[in-house]
Structure formats: structure tokens, C-alpha cells
Length: 174
Image (cartoon, rainbow, N blue to C red; front, side, top):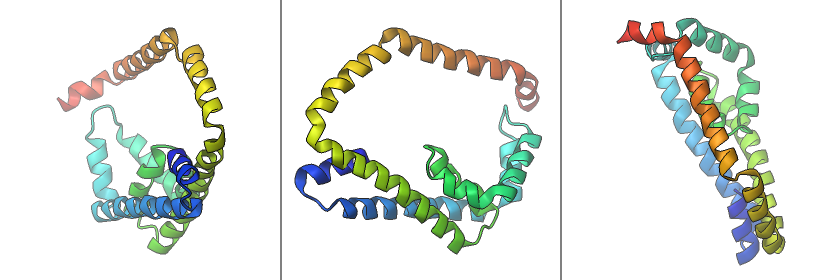
């Protein structure tokens, strides 16, 4: 989204058209996932998810219960969280959330998210040289080799810990 704003600022494209186009595209993708979730349904989704190694049936049930209680907030607020913004459409469809409500919540949340990021890119176009200079410094200072290794090492350790605690589930499904 910031790059779309940057292009609008550099080329003189209407920044609001970038927001509208990105929102239409995002909501279109959300509708496809919603319909997929609706066709699969909640019970079938539960059975499929429960068969995945490392996934416990009671965890799937907890997630379904949580979505049942907080569906509207999950769809709206999920639009502000990367990855969740796409995946939240599946349980919304599986739970048969009314289409109109799903589309409205998705559109409003997505439009806010896209507006913030497109405008951020648009406003940065005039400061691009400064941004690039500080970005290079920040990337090196904070994401130098040592932090990169620490980050991936932590991910590997957390994954190994998770798998170790679920090892019975893996051997039961094999």
C-alpha cells in the first residue's frame, strides 16, 4: 500500500483512486475466501482442521466458540492485522455470517487500513531521499546479521518446543 501511495505522489495519480482500487481488490479476495468457508461449512472445517498434526480438536472448538461470540469484531479488527486480514474470511463464511454484514465490516476495515498506508506512501514521496538514508541505517543497526540469526533461532526453538509438546499427536496420526 505505501508503494501505491508513493506511485500516486510521484506520477500524479489520484491517491483516492489508489485507496478505492486497493480496497475493491482486497474485499474481492475476502469475498472469495468467505464463499470458500461458506461452502466447506463449520462442521467439515472442524473435521479437516482436527486431522492436521499438531492441532487439537478442543482448540478448533475454542476458536469456533470465540468466533461465534466475537465474529463482527474479528472481521472488522482482523482487517488491521497482516495474515489475519485474509484468513478471518474463512471462519466468517463457515459460520454463515450474513454476507451483507461481512462485506460491510470488511469494506470499512479494509478502507481504513488502505487509506492509512496509501497516504503514508503518498506523504513520504517528498521525503524519499531522507527515508532511504534512515531506512538503510535502521536496517543495518537493527536487522544486522546478529539480530537476523537471533530472530530465526528463536523461531526454530519455539517451533521445536511446540512440536515436542505435541509429539504424541504426530505419532497418533502417522
